[in-house]
Image (cartoon, rainbow, N blue to C red; front, side):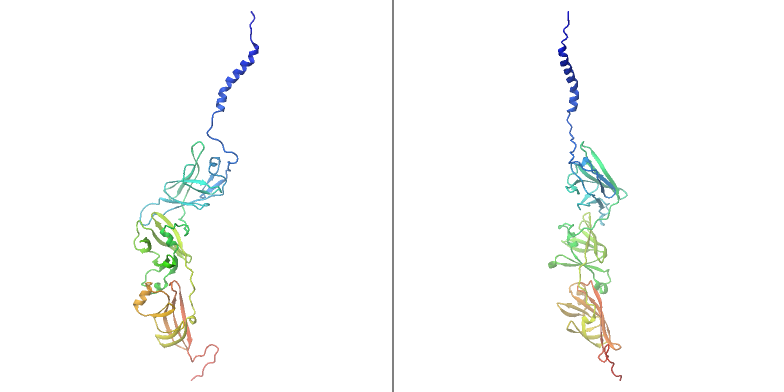
Amino acid sequence: MAMNLNFERIPLWGISVLILSALPALYLCTETNDYAPPTSKSMISSKQLPIAGDFSLPLSNSLSVISHDSEAIQINYSVDPPRPSTEQTPSRLLIRLGQSKQIKRVELPAKVGLEFTSNGSLQFNDHADLFWLTCDLLPNGQVEAFTYVKTPNGYDHCKANCSRFPEETPFSSTDDISAKSPFKLLAESRWWGQDLLAEKFGNGTNPLERIEIGPEANQSLLEFSAGEWLVFKENQWQTNESISNHLPIARVKNRSPHGLEMEGWEGSSHLRFKILPTSTIPLRTKGEELFSQLRVRSEKQVSCIIDKQCLILRTGDWVLKANNRWKILRKKEEKDAFLAGNMTGDLFVLEKIDSKGTTKSIAGQLFSTKRSQSAAIEFIQPLKNNPGPGQPKGKAR
């Protein structure tokens, strides 16, 4: 009996077997993947960006969702010194971003969000979930910092770290200080230098720095020594012997011809700033610009013309110019009132009268209205019977 093998169906069977064997492979090939690699336009370079000088942050595909090509960036750290009235250890860190000029003060340990702007500048981000910085203070005083990036697979990947000693608190300009801060008023004050009059005729205390606070229409003069504390109390800065535990405080850290270097604390936040000197008009230093027609009445008394005003002066007199008029201050109460700042104006102190030989002269000190400048003044006038330079001498009797 002949068998019918149906050879014409063999190709169909072969195709069916091939399809069935390929199904597992097709299933594996069509399995979905949550991560889609970035396109060539979103790819960024692996340029190394230095951070804080001690470590670098390589930009790679894992940062492509929040960053792109960027110039070199810097992160600097400074630790707030503890408030002098407390024994706390430093716990606040000031983080400064070099290119964007942003600053942030945080409590340690800290976690701070970061991001890159469209121009490649590093800046702070309110959300620390994709790219962030962690900071803490080591026992040796160094700041330890790590940067982290959230990878496409959901893992936190540490990109860079550093350990370095923090810098000093940077100087804040008047623009950097908030208008609501009491330090704004102090930083915008005008420094007149030291009170030279009080230094010479005062009660022997340390030299007093003199600053004017507030707008010109409502300014006040504040005097303090370099060792004194300033306290912001009752809506104004004033000197105080003790340090408050909660009020804003400030003191002079250094002085130079370029200004007063101040430091202060508002709460536990540390601040450094400068009070700049005020430009002044130079004093008259030539006696003939101030005096004329000198006449010696005795060893202790002279008459003279000072700015077209005739006065009779004694050794030790204080002569005050106020409202374009010169007034002699002889009483102790008047001198004390002037030292206390109740009267202001240019002041000349007559120290010496001399009529020996062929000349007569007076000498003294001239102090500016702000008392931050002084000049030695001497006025010499030849006697009437003494010929001036180039004139013939009179006959001897």
